[in-house]
Length: 148
Image 1 (cartoon, rainbow, N blue to C red):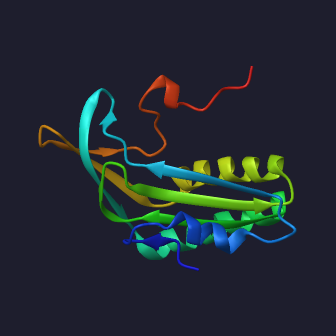
Image 2: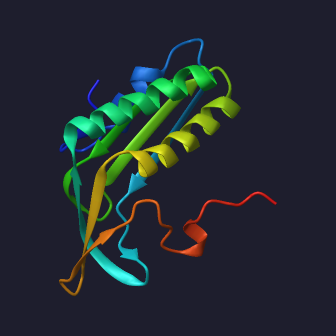
């Protein structure tokens, strides 16, 4: 399975790879290019990756998640130029129950952002560009909830 693609991601095709009669929960996450970051209007993104390492790390993440939660995972991440509204990353998890599927999906996106060598460059409406740390929250509302 290839995890990186320069083509648009088809969610229905990914979901079809994890659906089966024994999986009562199919959970998906889409990371979509938004039109703002840190209070600045974003015009588009460009994702770069170290391909062989990114593919291998995505495979390791999927291989870790599937037995841990007893789920099946489909994962794709775009590379290249993306416009506002396009899907940058898609994760679909199929499992017997929703708790495991949600937990696995959440863990996978955090691990992809933390471990996979994919770099995001934002192009702002004013023509300037900046590399963005994929593990940094751009807004307090974007940060993961902290345990009480």
